[in-house]
Image (cartoon, rainbow, N blue to C red; front, top):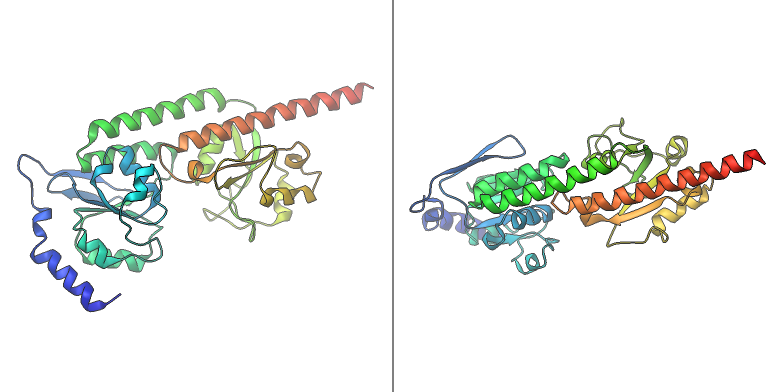
Length: 317
């Protein structure tokens, strides 16, 4: 990136673009707290917003602010119209000149997904930043309502938050108290990585009546050994995939577990892959991913019942 070009762009933002931050007629200042605990105050609801994470783009659309998004990073692909939004880089490298040229009055940042050096440069632009990093299931609804305040789209944001909360509540009422299923969630194959109990996916597992076998580990995404998985002997192994897959046709990364046929998850055929966009992005679509996981774990329960019935029948003979 040309240093001189960026300096000129920033200077232009301060000399001729400050009107973007001035209060608009008949509009009052708006305030919301972001996921870093910062108070974000705008002189008026945002009209030109840049999203620096795919999940943020989804949240902005769900909160009723799609028409206000003027820039987004790579992989901002949902809803479909998000694919037409101008790109400003990705989580590894942002085009700061492009960002300045778009004259945003709000930038929504992925708190730990954007590099610290990039965040420091963004702060130097003196454009309001809202940090987004939902950690728990209900944080998705909270994010929607907070963004709705900053966007001036509260009715749409509250409606989306309410629908999401109802979906999650229905799943919890249906599945959370069912017979527990021990679960190993595989994030990555080599090295073998999983999630601990503080991760949102662990929340989803609990919602479905599952038990994360590595919930007690640190850090958030710990590395584990194959031996540790074998010792935990989970009843189900789950991973994220690109697109939907069939429970009867597990991904290659899961079929390698067939090398250990006595592993309960393998013996019962409980190797499940779920569309990663529905399970790893903290957006309203997380309810869809949770619904799929709940169905998979219920299938694992039925196979447990079948296995016990078969064992009992064998014992009587």
